[in-house]
Amino acid sequence: MRFISYAGVAKPSFLLVHPELPTLAWKLQLTSISPRLPRTREKLVGLITRSQHSDTGRTQATRYADSSVSNTKSSRLGQRQRGPSSLYSRPSLLDMKNEKVENRARVYDFLQGIGIVPDELDGLELPVTVEVMRERVDFLHSLGLTVEDINNYPLVLGCSVKKNMIPVLDYLGKLGVRKSTFTEFLRRYPQVLHASVVVDLAPVVQYLQGMDIKPDDIPRVLERYPELMGFKLEGTMSTSVAYLVGIGVARREIGGVLTRYPEILGMRVGRVIKPFVEYLENLGIPRLGVARLIEKRPHILGFGLEERVKPNIESLLEFHVRKESLASVVAQYPEIIGIYLKPKLFSQQSSLKSVIDLGPEDFGRVVEKMPQVVILSDKPMMKHVDFLKNCGFSLEQMREMVIGCPQLLALNLDIMKLSFDFFQKEMQRPLDDLVGFPAFFTYGLESTIKPRHKMVTKNGLKCSLGWLLNCSDEKFEQRMDYETIEMDEMESSPSFDMTTLTEPRSDESGSDYDSDDEYASDDEYA
Image (cartoon, rainbow, N blue to C red; front, side, top):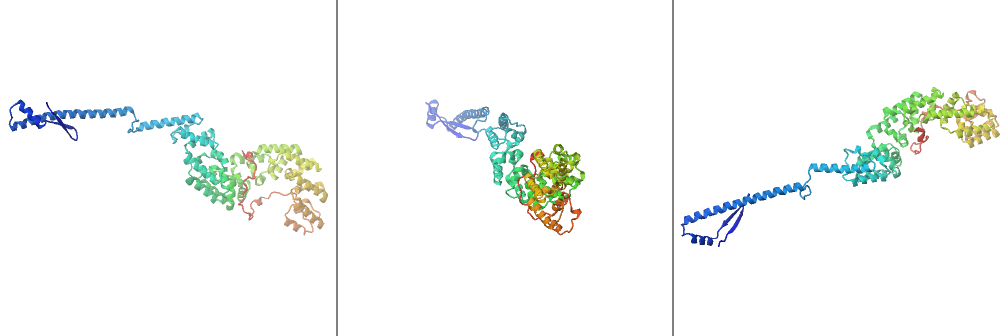
């Protein structure tokens, strides 16, 4: 019976196993087989035996190591075949790229499914999941934007709701921009959702405040002209303001001008403002007069020079307005160069021809004295003509009166009736006096007509209505000292004085601005 034991020793590269026989078993085996060997022979036999067992162990260790390596390779091959689901695996760049393409395709499918064309979104960083994109679309819908609005500017889908949209809208709301205007605001300038509040928006607001626009007016300015939020301070905005100040617009009036018409800040001086100013100068309006017109009606800078202004001037000439009167016509009613003029001229000429038999040349004189006649409605004009007829004036007299004072077609009828009653009962003058000075109806009954008539009657003077009314109160006081009435002072009717445009301004502050425009509706200029 044999007893064999194995002792293992670990090596760096492989495992050796040494079988060793117990001393007792070795002795018993040798004793039973052969006689006792010499000590040297015992050593030799033991060495050979160990060598044989060592070779056997080495072969077994090699087989074990080969098996281990084979198992490892098989394990790695299995991991590659199973894919990235393993706990310790990592996706390749190709896998990541393919997954990104698939996610973008799903987002595009979603957008196309609701009617949004994603063609312009290539290259734009978009949400990875459909859920995030749906959140953005729903938020834009909540602001009132439609699919059509988004298609007009699809890049808005690149804005994060939390990082971009909400901070910008919160800032606008804190400024005072009304939520009810957000929809139109974003339709006109959706790029604002890309802006940084600190870097882009706040500096523009500070610039507006520096232009003396009141804090309460700034939200109205932004509502009227949202594109303003995208302008660079050192660009068009500063140069347009500098040019206006240079031609004579008072610095203290700039705030009011920009409040009423902020579009000026987006106008290029060389292409828009300067050519417009120079054209009006060529018509005969002094540069300072143009500056005064801009202070009162800054929106005239928005009238297209080639598209509207020049054609309207040609139309005035066509309807017998004299060239030397063009400057006066524009100065009295600047809007006349910005409306659809030719159809209105034709309509008014036809109406006045039918009611008072007004000829083309006379119509030109009417426009020269009251350019606003082009926007009067037919019914009010007919009421005024009927009033004159009821007063006893003939058709020829009415025509003469309208040519001399076209304002008769637009005055308050109740006041005209009171003035005519005083003329008949108190002044007891003939109707021909009114035919000669129809502007009588334009003067205040209580403030001018009654007190002056009383003074003339007291002094026993007989004068024309023109001499009585067509002068300032100071001039009238001087006339009361005259012994005789000079004929050169008997003006038949007042006329527009161009120098009034360039007179020094009063000390009244221009800081109070009316948000409502002092001109016709936008439809007139469409």
